[in-house]
Length: 439
Image: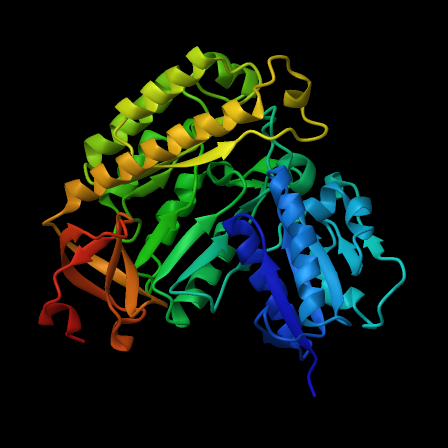
């Protein structure tokens, strides 16, 4: 009987693509992949370490896995495993810990599933994580996360990612195209491009060989994929050329996620970001000029050291005035070995929570206003597999989430609909006409 393996992924879309790649390695080694809630011989936990909360989550997931299957072999990979291998190795029940260079050799390291009294640790210095390992998620949903870039050469003062993932490096355009064609043959309708610093795509062995826009133009010609979405791109790397190409593209959708982090130039400087808020305003204006219905998401951090009430209000007002669609709000948490941890002006936890709440309310307001602007329009919706209380969901090209009565014939189908009203859930309702049931 085949051994069984289960996976749990914490963190970003990049982690999901890498978990899928590791899963395919296990399949080749004759393991059966099962749900995390099922009994398995091996549990693989792919970790994140963007916030302190992610570290705590890792410990909780280990505990849950051992409740389900007390004798299971527990493997930890990912960013937390690179940053704090000793700390993880001391978590009760953990058997093996693999760093950034070693995680894709996990199957080779598991030769015996006997529980060890002390966890095995394979963790090279992060500078040795210099190879690009291709990966994409598969089988989870109607869209695939395709990793095209890894690592980061930026040195934002709050971030541990360069220490966890190493220097910026990329796949070749020809290999990305090959993977996109493989994905197209599987029947997936949408690809989401992912990377640590996606706009920095093109560095191979430390030498720039391509620009991100070169990749975008090449992918736009791949037959069989209906939609390609850019997951997140730094404002200083989002050029007019990229924006203009997406606006006229056959496959790239009108949706950008652009990290801001702060609307205060003072705080942006303390964060060591590579732009000022004036550049951010220019990027948003250009997008809206060429794509008035474009969905724009924003990352923002509250409670960064030195952020006064005036700085926060500056950020709040800046965001309020921008024609953006939603926010991802992060509460600053101190990370070891980062310059930000040594900065003066620590913001009390209660103040951080209050500011986070204010921005979450603003995000809801922005999302509702954006959805309101779309009511009455005809859009193509890609319907998802997930169901909830007899309803199914889907997304328009510009990332409006819709809900309708579940119909198995609609799963992974793209259908034209009319957006009629905002539902009580906050999602968009659609006009249920025979039009969307035509196959």
